[in-house]
Amino acid sequence: MAKLNILHYPDARLRTVARPIAVVDDRIRQLAKDMAETMYDAPGIGLAATQVNVHERIIVVDVSDDQSDLRVLINPSVIKLDDHTKVYQEGCLSVPGVYDEVERPDRVLVQALNLQGEPIQFEADGLLSVCIQHEIDHLDGKVFVDYLSRLKQGRIQTKLQKEARQKAVL
Ligand code: GNR
Ligand code: NI
Image (cartoon, rainbow, N blue to C red; front, side, top):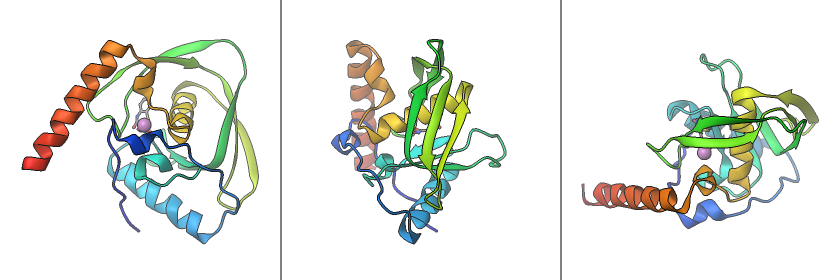
């Protein structure tokens, strides 16, 4: 088991588009374990491989409050089930200390492979739906701040670059 290092916005590596996973083998199962450990340790409710500088399409999600509902999704995709949207206050382990509102489709059909390489699908809404969409965005090189105004994006960049510089001189 290993805790992995999380990249911070505006790191250019967060812009990498992840490639599909062709074979779900022990390497992928170990990566999933390490990602889950990293997510729980943070703590967070989701983590995409992109955030730990692995550019393959795998995410881990657990929106329970007692670590009882871990989902590992390989090559995940969502299909919007209706036009109803919801606004959530989002945060991101790659954008620490920043929270802002993002509007997304509420009810989605999630399709993916599980850790045995078998196709699975389920419906999601509420926080689970938000989290899975947020994680798939990471796999596509997107971060939630991309949905905010240019003014806010600039302020967030300045704040995080300042924090990174402070950390470097400590
Ligand atoms: O821990 C997280 N919380 C969260 C809250 C609202 C919407 C999305 C998220 S995902 C985030 C963890 C993370 O950065 N995943 O990429
Ligand atoms: Ni995130």
